[in-house]
Image 1 (tube, rainbow, N blue to C red):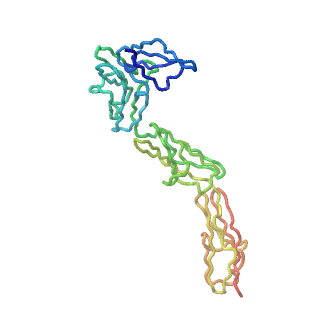
Image 2: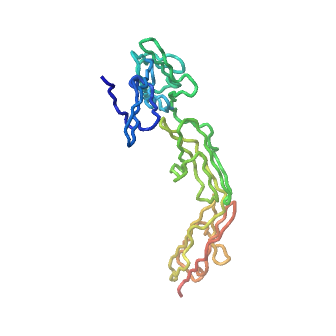
Image 3: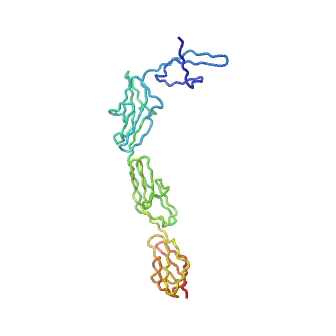
Length: 315
């Protein structure tokens, strides 16, 4: 009886490469064909020694796993051989009970480390994977809650035209960062460093950084930023006010700047008696109360004057 030939899918070149596994053992021939006919070669016999064999592309060893405490990680391999026995090792020490093709470890300080595997077949032939340089190996790392290692200063001071940089350092794996101002997240500020340029009074506040990973969250100490800014008018008084004799009128303005702000209203070049707040109320207006009012705001850094507000008292 002749040989029973089974075509190999895709094997149509002049060279055939076969991975040496038990199922690949057998007699191989090649048939050459052209327009004049065909011819078949003499058989080539492939014998595969029955030793423990890891299957390429079928192992889960070549990886680094990061897991929070108490979460599990599973390592799996595929191998073939006769009467295979498995034994997992952690940092070279035998793991009791880890005698299957798959091993599941619960992340903790005692399971953190480098895992390797030994295969033994029925003939007591052993094959180790992960012991030689360059071999695939699984490393399980316990992903711990972040810890702030370099905190923020409690206070910062910056000039109104200058800038300030805040940096937080933390230990842990796969960290993410989120900066906050007065407890509110700052959009887009997700690096370990926060840079604030061209400071103004509105930048003053308490800054902190929230650091997270899958194991937990930690928040840095808050850093209070005091901006040394001169006063700036944010809302001007009404430009024109008309009032009847004996009537009341109110002028107001708003300003920001480094504390403490001091206010003084003026009627022309003369200080308005008692006009030391950002709101000026005049009752029972007389002709003498008509004119141009301005508000001067000062602090320890500088001063500014509002736009004029003209008050007309109808005759």
